[in-house]
Image (cartoon, rainbow, N blue to C red; front, side):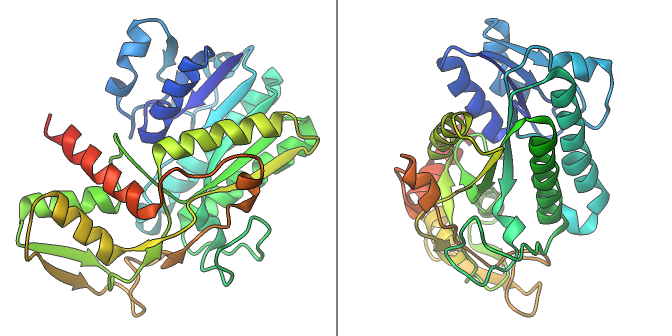
Length: 321
């Protein structure tokens, strides 16, 4: 099978590329390296296991359309992942998330691609009043431009699925952690503690509680969701991809401190909103209902705490090499 991965040199994308190659697929990667790292895919490119194209999805041109020729499934992971940036620079998220998705869909339509798997986000739910939150929760009211851009992309994919017969596979992600990650609370805490081992600045009140999933469990979920959807009679499928539990920021701070062998770290809380969020637009409590994915044969192998502990060890280990 011919597959194409946008954002394939990024944190999650490069792990997905590894798995697709191991399954014997012919893989093309598109990445402009704005947040990706060529080193993650360098050996696969040099070994001619994958084809790499440095293209900008914001620019719709003949090169982009040609890249999708003879592709069966597109895994669309390319996006700006920084939720906080969307508050101060919303145009970036529109261009890199919505416009890029539209261009990908147009390339799929022109080349008659069979399916597109899209990494959406739990942020499309906003401050959900039902926790754990199921896929059919309504109304969807994002509180960040990032969440809004993901929801807009979802709606484009659903419409293209109905109009042009492109199977849509929408994956609403919890917080994904593991080796190669470059942003998020783990990275933030490690950097701060390496700079000042005695004091850790925490945005918000530390009680923010969310679900975390290790990237290895996510890759397994993608395989199960795509395999199931390709045999589904529905024009599109939506899956929550997260864990069965959650963990708060204070506990993550303690895990990181312990992993760095630091005792008596002083936690300093920075008030950014009146209700203790990390920043304006931050969803304070997030736990996804994953019964749909469990019902087709997937479940995480690590809980949220184990995923965090594993990711912290991996990030520290990679950083010391």
